[in-house]
Image (cartoon, rainbow, N blue to C red; front, side, top):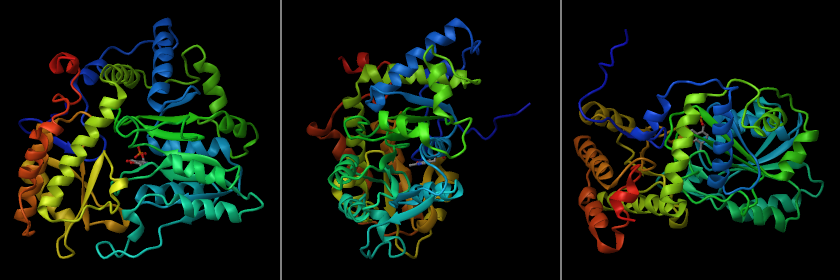
Length: 422
Ligand code: PLP
């Protein structure tokens, strides 16, 4: 029998930017007995979650739910709408954007990458990985594409590798200002249910997401929210697809079912997560994340270290990237923090490996877990010999206890309405 002897006393601090900590209420829901996925109870569950998830994406159009990780949803978005050799424009804001480009090339698409062209003293090897999408660059490129060769514009809403969010509505306006028919594909895998996101209002054609971030579920569910234009495009798109094909899934979904065996127990969890988010209200969820993010940034500022996101208007409410002095190995700092304090922090990925670490502040956290997180970081940084300008923990405590920042005290607890007295 498997012995879970890797579990230490107390709760592990899972402070990576997803998978995020799963609330007990969701874990309990997932542990219920598996039911017949063709039976009547399942159909009712299916209809409930299919309508609930639309409210999270803020769409009145279909949302496809796959038993997959986010990468599957990337593939589904492209394989349902594109044809072999189609040209797409992808804006590189970080590691996940580059992985999406790589996947698109493997599918047989021609990928053109746009990127911020400036220089940067803190991350000279990856200057574009500190900024969000520059919508004007997209408008310029589309304006020059008079033959409309570009079939899709792909952008990441919340770049999980950098802690930078992008203005998706501005990208839609850029496409419209160029009078270009390209579809707008958005990865909001780590933005959804933590950062404000509006699929319909912002004019996204396909929004890709996953379960393991703001939805507070384990990994294993992926989503495609689709616009009528994307659905129309899927009728003539010729990339091969079967498992990912929207048409068969949409047909089964009409009665709450899937054309194959769905991940029943994770869907119990999704149903629970949707109830929790609706009870709290999405605006309160977004405000809670903004508050946590501001406290974490106040800590990083107090340490005197650069926040990876260089534009204050693009700060992520989900995670904060912390750049370390070039002489310090950020992976070594994370390893030490894991061994000494049982806390996982996000690694620097791809071009910024070893140069920075990421603090996740999303989902089922609260003020005190974040203060513990910052204390673990502060101790780890000091142990690594990083000279800190001041105490980040102190700065965050002041932030949290300031009357103007008190907010809801109870984070994502299931019984939050009782605890908050609302
Ligand atoms: N896109 C973003 C922004 C992500 O954060 C991730 C994973 O963290 C992915 C795509 C890939 O998703 P997955 O690892 O679930 O396949």
